Image (tube, rainbow, N blue to C red; front, top):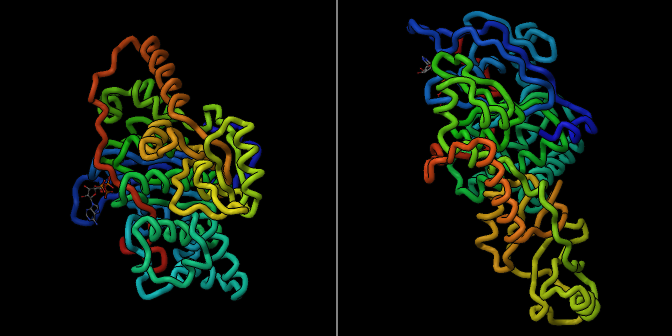
Length: 417
Ligand SMILES: Nc1ncnc2c1ncn2[C@@H]1O[C@H](COP(=O)(O)OP(=O)(O)OP(=O)(O)O)[C@@H](O)[C@H]1O
């Protein structure tokens, strides 16, 4: 996925290797993790997926030594993680977990700046970093930096959690069910934001999820685990969907995988329309005549950083100058899947959606027909390829859970071993 894109960027992540790693919890007979060996390539997102209790979280937490392995070796960037002090190691690994793990008595800025402060950064560098990160995760720094967690929505808390995980620019980020307990639209936006952030930063991200659809959407690779963290399959989403390695992987991916492959298609794969745009402060008369010349009944209003603010109809343009439109505009990130696009378009009065790229910059507009035509075309191809007709209604989604929130655990000692 995006290999060409990646080659043009500097990869800031580090490779993680697990070599014969096992964990037997005290008092237990069977290993929770039984001899897993794995390489997570630098700069990739690897999604751990598998049934409850299969050892996903245990495996993840051994990477930042919240849990110590019973045997085996874990290395990051070629260095055995036991060679470093635990605190030092954790400062080089961002950790993001589900829901409210921000410190409630600390402001957003304080929450984000914990690790940079521990690293001895000076006040102005910390402040700049906080603002930069809030911008990166889509929160207005001036508005949110002094708020307390209770003054934020669940999705906003999770964004702050991601900012906190990224604060000291760690090469490795670990995420455990990061998008839990938020509504589906917020969940989709947080996923898209993660992809957008990763497009800029190229960290090595290991993320645990219960949700195969989320794994397929976010992962450069998907690791399907079965009990004891035995690897059922470790491959790209495309291969996992088209050629499950065994019955377990097949069952886990579920029926209807050729339909699921549709969810791999992104807005970025489609051609965008480029209707008339206007900046706040432009002359209304000029904007109106440009739109009429283009045959457009509406215009996209952009701010001075090229971010879309609204999509008013021409009849709504009153006054001499273009002003900031009222109401929220729901954008789609260009990495959003076509399924996400359809959901968003259903709530748009324009029969389409505004598409944005990095840092919410405007890219164009996608309309309903382009998406449905593309889906139909892919469906035809999938049917011809597989011949096995996907069972209607069998595309079950496991518990839809999503959130992005960091933890306190990164700051205190390991609880195991
Ligand atoms: N602290 C512990 N002490 C004893 N057993 C544990 C402990 N933590 C986890 N286990 C057991 O180890 C196994 C793996 O647990 P783990 O939390 O890694 O699974 P998981 O795949 O992340 O599960 P889930 O998806 O439900 O979070 C389970 O059988 C669990 O009961």
